[in-house]
Image 1 (cartoon, rainbow, N blue to C red):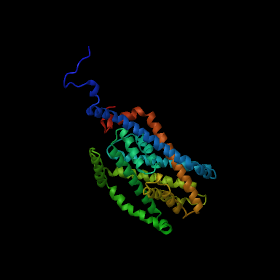
Image 2 (spheres, rainbow, N blue to C red; image 1 turned 30 degrees about the vertical axis):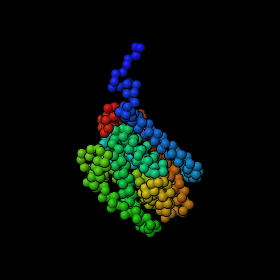
Image 3 (spheres, one colour; image 1 turned 135 degrees about the horizontal axis):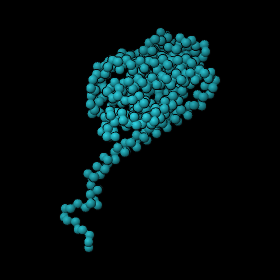
Image 4 (cartoon, rainbow, N blue to C red; image 1 turned 180 degrees about the vertical axis):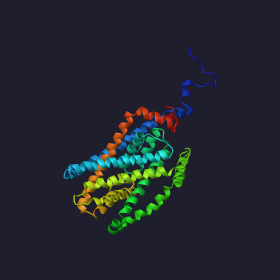
Length: 345
């Protein structure tokens, strides 16, 4: 009897929560949590693929390494890791030059953890994960995507510049690879500051982000290319240390060119995890100019395993460094955030 009777037209509080407007508002409120859960699920899946890929190939790799000089293997591993660090510096230089400064540890976390997506069939996963990691820390997805694409382009240009140094050997031994050098003029045009700025602004506009406040500087491009060339040269020494003892040090340039051109060719095999197979065909083909096919195959296998281990190790180190420095890095995220939810802390 004491229960209040509803007047005609008065909303029932028990059914008001079920209105379409209320459900929509609840869904919008839950979207950030859903996005974060999906982001971490993607990270876990990608890391799982990378670890599975590494453990699957580690047996034959470890057997081949056991027959080599431990000091040369250790030196080769160390130089490979330094080369990976230089690659990170190239990537963060581009991101900073595109108008979003990030501390190097944060850039390393976004780049290195994100690139583990290349071990999932379909290279799009690496770009997607880097975009999501960037968004988590306030960097516009479009800016991360442009950075990743330009980092790949700079890698291509750097590989072709190194390849040009060994062009007589390549032309004589494997003329079928000469088509790769047709990419060099295209890459150089795309790296011109005016062209690079226009292309970046097109991508930012597509994602409804503000255009760059100023043109990309020559210094940014030259510094990124320098880091990329340095990394490839170190990869060349990494390979030379794995080579038979009768291979002259002067062949290090050919080895750097072989590995870098293998990376470039692997970009076209985007359905294969990390360009597996294509990279090896190019690498082994060029290495047979200075050693037997068996030796070249063994070097290729060992190098692939060491690169996979290096990717996992550097990604873990970057994630650990970001965790240890989380307060300082979070302050930087908030200061330069391009998303309101990150800027609000």
